[in-house]
Amino acid sequence: MSPLAATGRLAGRAGGAAGSLLPGVAVAAHAALAVLAADEFAAFGWPLPTGFDTVNVTFVLATATMGLVATLQVVGRAAAGSVALRTLLRSRPPLPSVIHNASAELGLDGRVDVVAAQEPFAVTYALVRPRILVSTALADALTPAEITAVLAHEREHLRRRDPLRLLTTRLFCGWYWYLPAARWLGRRSALRRELAADRAAVGSAGPGVLAGALLKLAALPVCPAVAAAGPPGEEPGSLEARVAQLEDGRQPRQRLASLRLLATAGVLAELAMAAVCCAAMSQLLPQGML
Image 1 (tube, rainbow, N blue to C red):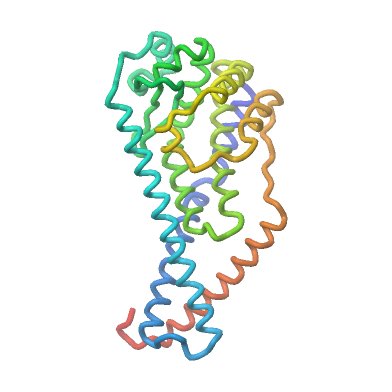
Image 2: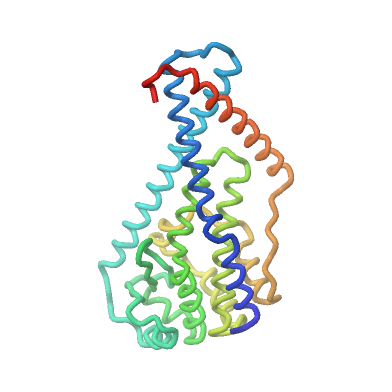
């Protein structure tokens, strides 16, 4: 295993199970507070006895409602993308020999699907049992070594179940879309997964081969179904960041602008104060309301 790939393995373990649970806990706590807020308005009417309580309890309920709407939009886009990919799968030609050979070399036999499409692509799809989907055009657009590099990249996405991880992050960032840092966090997470998959792939084909494949695919048209299944947009400069990592052997640093960080901290502080107020108000609810 190359030093770059080993670095990727170690970086991928950072955070652990606790980090994976925190987003879900935060959303669940916010949703529970929103239920409390609704009960408080049902019991006391609007406005509440004091202006301070009214503003804070309304803030909790409003932000949770906006988060729910945005989360449903993320779910809708993910469902539409899944349908688009499933539609592509109706056409299943034989696996081109060059792709079959690369799949066998990487231990991916039986986990690669091929579809007839004019645009060359390779993506990892499905949440519970992820698989790799490639187009017949990929065999014509890339050399055998580049195809091996691309499949090795997708193998890492498959191994780490990245479609599920990415959707989880998108749902969390959708719920908190009104935080200035949320969009940055979602795109940063997507780019980090691409960088990690690149690091894992260099051991199979070398950084130069993978960089060449990335640049070739970036210059060609994107399949509409694949675009629909992915995140709404790509972080500006992500291709440059990936190629730079392959050239330098170092993971690019991603920083959040200071103003966005301060604004996010301010909104979170207000949300925390509103949550405390909402929880305190719940003590005044008549018995049986909860």
